Amino acid sequence: MREREADRDGTIAVTKVPTADNLADLFTKSLARDPFTKLRSFVLNILVKGILAPIPRARRAASKGI
Image (cartoon, rainbow, N blue to C red; front, side, top):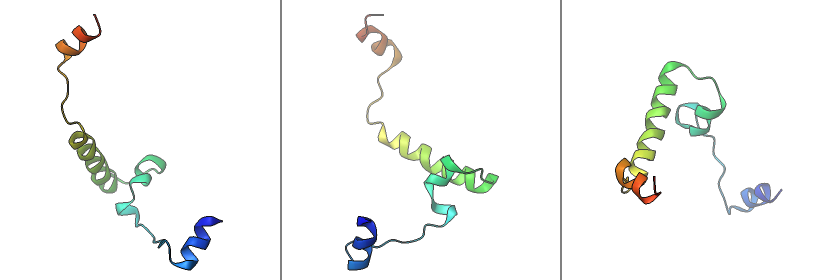
């Protein structure tokens, strides 16, 4: 109910997101090849850019005592 009130009083603006740009559709719908590929690439690029300094396997294993 709070969302509707916030929308009415202008605190937030609710807009429709087209399927072509909606990341949630990647995880909740069966998509055709083109939208799937576009959204998959977008998500993977975000994840790759989000990793600041990956730890090499050898160092990771050494730090765990393996």
